[in-house]
Image 1 (cartoon, rainbow, N blue to C red):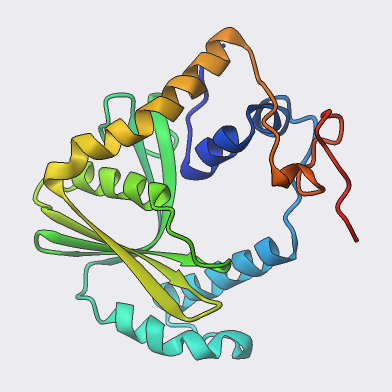
Image 2: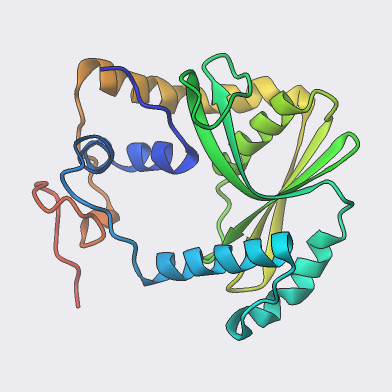
Length: 221
């Protein structure tokens, strides 16, 4: 089977549990319905996009984020919101729906300022130190803009109204790809061998939609 193009969320789901990935994204035997927090995150993203793209005021329940919206809005005129981005198998930029696409992503907010790029990903969940998603965006930024030397990547945590940052230099491109390779090799091998092993974790207890799995457990009330 030819491997499907991947994305930050697709690779994360595969790493968490190949069987869940197979059932949800390939067989489509079950739907991974969004929970309350995910639905809130979608609403938040839509409101932030309209604020940045169309100057539409934030709804009352999100008005406390206006200072942050103004802050990132001040980052020069080359700003982009909800930018759909993609790479082919050679790590070259391509169109989102290209026949040669290998990786896809959507960058919530980005800014180009000479040799510096800034990108922001809005998060409605609890703060963490997982940078893989933003590292993939940085790889696209470096490939798309040869004049860039630095990518300043940020998570904006809406629960705490705080920000965490990671800055990558163009010299680190190889290191970023090397960090992804082990999981990508397993991803490709699963398609070629058509083997999708379940991976037991705390997410099996009611958070997984694949109820036919031997590790699935009902969520405790």
